[in-house]
Amino acid sequence: MADFLSQNSLYIVLIVVLVVWGGVFAYMNRIESKIKKLEHSSKQ
Amino acid sequence: MFKTLLFVWMTGVIVLALGLPMSPQPRAWYEFPTIPSLEEKARIMFFHVPTAWLSAVAFIMSMVYGINYLRKKNLEDDVKSAAAAGLGFLFCFLATATGAIWAKFSWGTYWNWDPRQTSIFVLLLIYGAYFALRSAIEVEEKRATLSAVYAIIAAVTMPFFMFIMPRIRASLHPEPILNVQGKLDMNPTMLVVFLASLAGFTGLYYWMWKLHVKVQTLELHRQN
Image 1 (cartoon, each protein chain N blue to C red):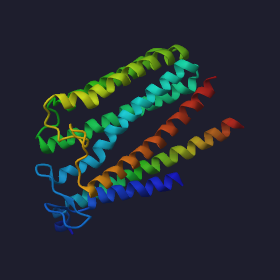
Image 2: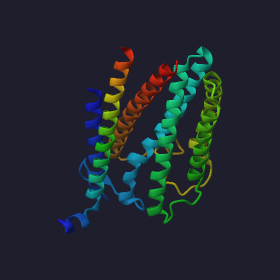
Image 3: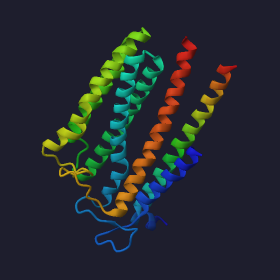
Image 4: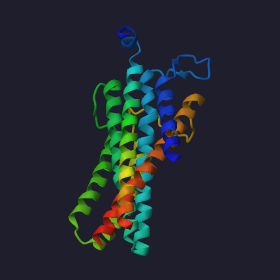
């Protein structure tokens, strides 16, 4: 496994970028749900 | 629906951009050609160019909403203009950072004042001054008016720094996607992934801009 990854380090880059993208997406989703709650409470 | 599509789209773009194999003489449709001297480092193009493109789009949006504010004096236009400028600055910084990382591996140094690096640095300073201006003025209407005028002037300088100056001075930067002859010279598979990345990043930018505008509008209504 270690040999495979050292020869194909691009896959490590791919995994890291996917994790970063997943993190950004989850963070933005969370912000959006919080904003919706704020909008809802400000209308009441 | 939009969010799910964006997630799947961008995940697909990342997998294709970093996962498709490179070959000196591509035979299959899924192979990228190896570009001499760039090799695997060419893959940064799928992330670096869209961030630079989005900073240009954001600065133009900031100008358009600035003009709208000056015409209608509606503070929501100021919020939209400032949100676009903020995201433009963020994407401009990302383009600079990804470019510097690429330069480290291609030129051996993060920064060497290449015309591209110099012009994007000046652009960062121009938009940095925009936020300094905004934070220095307390009165909302005055801040909005001056920011709108500044956003217009800054956006007028943007094409010069982003598109013209790097093309009139000799640069180590690889030839831009749209070359000096105005032609798109790219392998079809690379072009499809590149355009998909451009579309995905634009969707992400739009989502971020909408969220930013919503937060700032809530803040505006809370203050009034």
